[in-house]
Image (cartoon, rainbow, N blue to C red; front, side, top):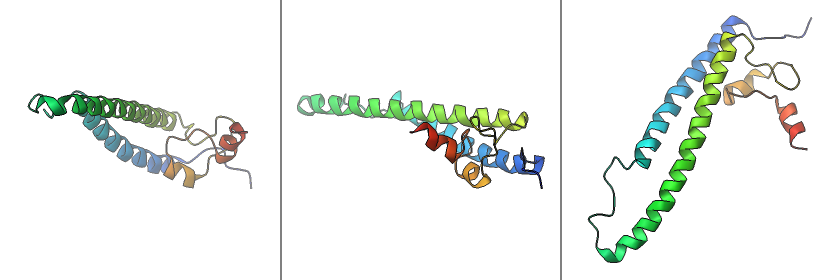
Amino acid sequence: MAEKTRYSDVELEEFRKIIMEKLELAQRDYELLKSSIMNKDGNDTDDTSPTYKVLEEGASTLSKEETTRLAARQQKFIQGLQAALIRIENKTYGICRETGKLIPAERLRAVPHATLSIEAKNEGKK
């Protein structure tokens, strides 16, 4: 039996559903992070006493920086999921970009935006 070179349309549809669910959650999380960065919740230091204001502003700045990093990471994840949807449409989803072999379905279910097989990923770390 010849080695499988791509996933069937039925399998691609299964992956598309997984990706759409993850994308919806990721976009919701991203919007929460964005609103936190923009301070839309009104939680600022304007109504605190001057003694605590300096400390709170420092903590607020650190918190905002961390939230900004998380938002950037979330945006990158969203872009990866969107790229995976394009690969599904092109019927190239699940093919390792290094080896050209099929990435195991178990890996794709866990990391649906993966473009490398475990072997190729480990080779890159050497």
